[in-house]
Amino acid sequence: RKEVEQDPGPFNVPEGATVAFNCTYSNSASQSFFWYRQDCRKEPKLLMSVYSSGNEDGRFTAQLNRASQYISLLIRDSKLSDSATYLCAVNIIGNTGGFKTIFGAGTRLFVKA
Amino acid sequence: DTAVSQTPKYLVTQMGNDKSIKCEQNLGHDTMYWYKQDSKKFLKIMFSYNNKELIINETVPNRFSPKSPDKAHLNLHINSLELGDSAVYFCASSQSKIVGNQPQHFGDGTRLSIL
Image (cartoon, rainbow over all chains, first blue to last red; front, side, top):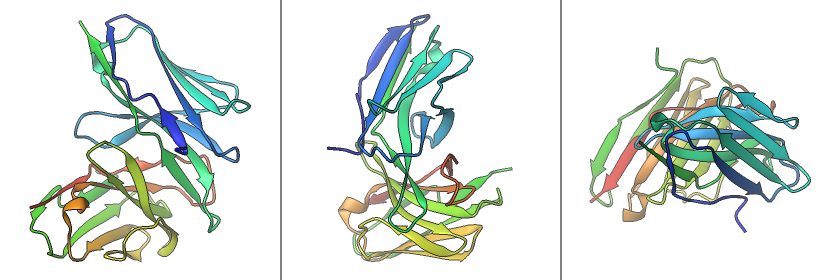
């Protein structure tokens, strides 16, 4: 089982739609959680951290369910510019005591006019 | 100002050659990383250094040798390049290896193609 799993998609949605991505992680000792966005042929960029109580940033809402070990990202009122790959990431403690980030394989989103 | 910069952006070379990729960050971060993103877009950590000290080495062939002359620089040297080394290599940094809620800041990648 992969440490971080996501549905690869692609998700094809019309502009204005609401779309939700889920991500599951296997290590119950995972410490912190993130969603990154990666545009085609670009580097990943942090979209938002995910907090236990859930958090919102404009049209984006992230949720964490520690008991079920999953993270979600909800995008409301999708824009054409939201088309990208969304990477789920978790920080776990490495065997030398430092944290390392494990990324999911990403979910591709296409928003169409 | 570029926060994490890596060079070269593109690297096309023949199998068997040795090549290096350089990375520098001006964020004052303590921790730097090398990731490999293969053709299936899976982003996998290779190495991590904290203040010039190697802290993560993820089952990477010993043809790959990272070097950190100071905490702002992390270079990657690859010997005897193989076809399977073709990928995008991303450098990244984060504030500290100790604080677990720190995100990564990525360079814009080096696209390595082996002929």
